[in-house]
Image (cartoon, rainbow, N blue to C red):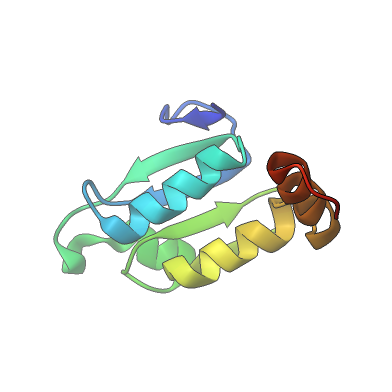
Length: 107
C-alpha cells in the first residue's frame, strides 16, 4: 500500500491522528484503499496539548489532513472522507463499470 508512517517522508498528504481513534482509522482505511502516500503524525492524546494540530488546522480535534498537492487542510472525518472520495476516488461511471464487471452484468 502507499501508506507511510515515517516523519522523514516527502509524502504529499500529512495525516494527524490518534492511536486507536475510530474516526482516524476510517480515514486511514480510505487513504490505504486509494493507495495514497501519506505521512502519519500521531498527536498528543490530551486535547489541550495538541498545539501542532491547532497551528495547522485551527482546531485541536483529529483526524486532520493536509494535502500539499491540492493545498487543502481539513478536519472532521466525514468531511475528509468526502474530500478523498471526490478528489482521489473513481468517478461514478468508472465505479458503475467496476461494479458491473464484478457482478458479471452491464453498466
